[in-house]
Image (cartoon, rainbow, N blue to C red):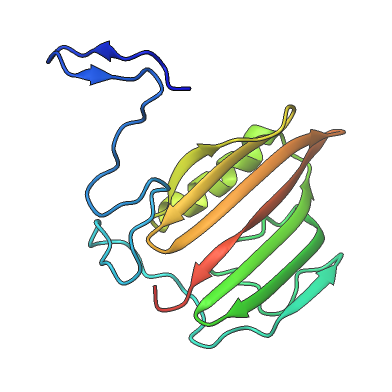
Length: 165
């Protein structure tokens, strides 16, 4: 069922649930098609390895091959689990951790880190009691979900980074 159309100032019909159209060349998720040059020409390059890391997972530690040059791990983070896996040029990552900080502080830490290397932040749906944000840049996409726990916050950061993209 579609919402009832209404007229815009120009007299054209619109729907209350319509979202703004993304810029040309950008899909609805904020991603540029693979191989498309970034819309921002002065983005810093991402320090991704040229070869794929070995598929691995670790509990209680940061897995070898985790791309800390792109995805920093704050010094106070207790790593609950982490993993990396590769498929072609794509590296899938996941980091589950605990920080002695508020939900907003955890989000702010990653917001600042990712903004500095050209990622764009967007809100993401989340379950009640948690907060989720997505960060995208060209063919790279990350989602951070954070919820309060005790005197701090528990978070999961997962996504896809593409070597050569």
